[in-house]
Amino acid sequence: MDSENVIEMLHITKEFPGIIANDDITLQLRRGEIHALLGENGAGKSTLMSVLFGLYQPEKGVIKKNGEVVQINDPNDATALGIGMVHQHFKLIEVFTVLDNIILGAETTKAGFLQKKEARAKVEALSERYGLKVDLDAKVEDITVGMQQRVEILKMLYRDNEILIFDEPTAVLTPQEIDELMATMKEFAKEGKSILFISHKLNEIMSVSDRVTVLRKGKYIGTVDTKDTDKQSLSDMMVGRSVQLEVHKDPAQPGEAVLSLRDFCVPSRAHKRNAVDHVSFDVRAGEILCIAGIDGNGQTELVYGLTGLEKSSGGTATLCGEDISHASIRHRGKNMSHIPEDRHKHGLVLDFTLEQNMVLQRYQEKRFQTKGFINRGAVREYAEQLIAQYDVRSGQGPVTVARSMSGGNQQKAIIARELDREKPLIVAVQPTRGLDVGAIEYIHSQLVAERDKGRAVLLVSLELDEVMNLSDRILVMYEGEIVGEFDPKQTDVQELGLYMAGAKRAQEKGGRPA
Image (cartoon, rainbow, N blue to C red; front, top):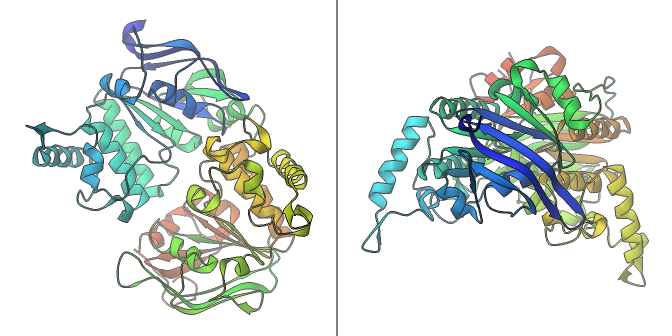
């Protein structure tokens, strides 16, 4: 029945050097449905959607719209066919305003002059209608990640797209923003728009999609109606084996404080007050302490101040008995591993190879040197060992350029590098962002293993499931302050949510929440 399928991708094959990203995949999208695309990192989900959006040309296969074969040579062709895409890593120009980003490439002009007034009115109407509130005059570099995503969605709507592709849309959102996005997607579907939704978060897929197509290692595994399946079946289809969805760990045996912060302050770039305001806590050997909170409440600046990416403006940070408040980044790194929030900006040199990235902080060690020159054989051997241990998938192994790898495999590479350095403190910021259930299961077990070896783990996460599952203690951060401390066994997501939103706070600083 061609009439009910608005898009058909038939027998699509797409190859890259050393890897078949899509191997004879067929996908059919019905009009007015939310169709989830599920698969592990590197399963070929983003590649398939990039083919539909005209960013890649397939070696084999055809695409049909409303039963007619169409040729999509570039994103302009896709836009003309009413296809829009929100990418996993947003495609926005940071120094432009929100309004300029939305209309860029689809400007209304009269006699060669921009008609911004009309454009603004149209964007305002769309933002009102779908509850996508944005500040049209703010520069993109000054707004939160959740806000940037709204800008990307408005970009699609402004172009009157009917087929909307969301690539990992919730990887960077808070629980509240995720709920809003899900409601918006349902609203779009109700109006007859068709949505392709790439995700590996099973809760979201179960709550929002009508059907799910599963890919594994570039191959099509099957399509199921969401109402007829469950999370365990989907995760087994996706990974090809049974996956533990819960974290199994013994009670923590905390020892001495490895990191102590006292009245620690970090200034804000956006406004005059401190982004981190007189924060005090300890992270002890053999425990996972989690900082929970809605994005933009000072967690990023706390980590920047701690790792040396920003200068702190008050208080002290003591690591392994040494005051590191004014130490260089390299000096701090002697006792600290850091899995950063932004893997592209602070985690990898994207144009370096995988093996070069693996030794970024270690190339000066004796084992990687011969008479002052880097010993490439030793680097290759080390990288191959980490790639195998952490199942980092790439087309050309150690010599793969980091930029060409999928987001999840880039993340695995960073985690492999940082955990293998075996430092007393591990600062892990959103460590499983953009990872699938199989990889999350592995990373969680690795962090617990590091804890059990007596390392101190400071986890910063926006994923409440991860916070509840993995941490031994939870601190909630709101507007730059610690507003409550919790034992995960004695609290629930609802209570944490109230503290995260600022609706409740502990009566006394440092005490148990009242």
